Length: 190
Image (cartoon, rainbow, N blue to C red):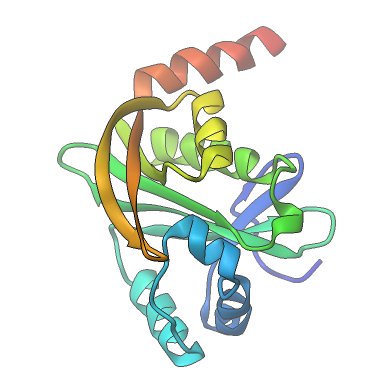
């Protein structure tokens, strides 16, 4: 084990805090062309900018940014964040990225999402969690739907990427929907 604290733990992955020593790893993980396309990332950043980003996020009370690591090997494979937390209205935005294609389609992202939803609705006491997905990212949209996110609408031609405009699909989940779907399941298992 690598000594990093496992904040949230599932069957295959655990979520841990991101710190300054992770800057090189974070930079390498999200530098690839495919992960940049799936996340709509246009700006190229250097390691110093990544370090500054990590420092800013660690002091930001409106964001919970965690790394996704494999339980079996401690390998970091992505990140997940609840951000733009609005305590007055009890809502926030969720985002996730898995850095390497070999880790996509393995159920790791789904498990990380469920861990973060449990944290968001349970610990943070949120009422609504929303996310956005680019229409061309059908695999991610399918995962969000299977978890229980509901389509709210489409922001047409929002992203200009690789000489084309792309739509953004807006989705959300309410606390009551989460509790109905997941807390009932856990009661049935007992």
